[in-house]
Image (tube, rainbow, N blue to C red; front, side, top):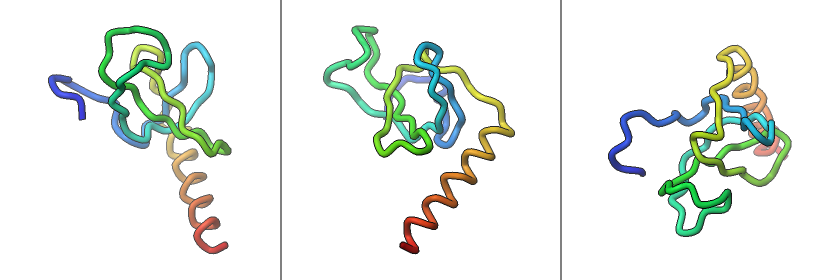
Length: 89
């Protein structure tokens, strides 16, 4: 977990990538040894789960904007339903 940060984006918060346009829920942080999105002087980036995608995306905080709470709840419900269906199968 990054040290010295005043406030971090909480898990399950809806975010939208400002450049690439995808939306998803924050799924933690990843401490980086090598930056995949260019040298930005950051020690970590957020992991973002996107509905319908098997892989997680990563992005620094400055590339993300917080989404609206209603849409956030809807996406959280979709992920929970999908997880339950996967467990039953």
